[in-house]
Image (cartoon, rainbow, N blue to C red; front, side, top):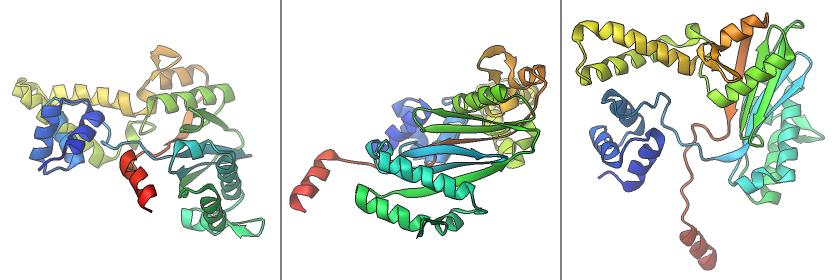
Length: 289
């Protein structure tokens, strides 16, 4: 039996109709990821990204110190706490601690000491005083050469943070960070798209074209054309530049005598399961507690 909430989740993730979502889930035994692929193969959904609800709260930040930068995410249970000064100070403290260390994993970072306490102890302490479970989810350290520049952009008060490294031009680096935040590229360029991801996408597009009844002799040509469109969505350098839409990002960057080296994009809660809440049940728990 496919639940209504599962159908609703698939519908919100893909934009497909309720009946189509129900059919997709029935065909895939309730597997959301497989249902997204099923819908795409039938030409019902164009969703290229994994069907994951972005629902967890918290804050993502970037910090720079010389040739080293860090992007990290710390989660809270509610958006209210994510805006709390105690929480934002904690996130800032963790970011500085990581930036001034050689930590490469969250486990390493939790053991770092700040004013006599480990980062893990600071999180436990704030969890107790704030009254919500807080979690240091992830971080990424990025380094650059002396001749290169960082660019950063924070959107919606830290819901989305992007960091870029360019060969030159700080103002351009900021513009590209804004591009990354807004357009959600998954890869820098075509060479960075994993072979298995590309093969799966080609298989989906071929199945889609077959289901549309297109000329079997032209399927490869059609798939190649659609793969180019896929690249324009997921590869940063192939996207249209947000400030000059008729120009590709790579051409615009080249016109400024610069080159994109790398980028990082964090969106709070991406890939995490939605925390289902029933307000009435929550109230009853409080009354009966």
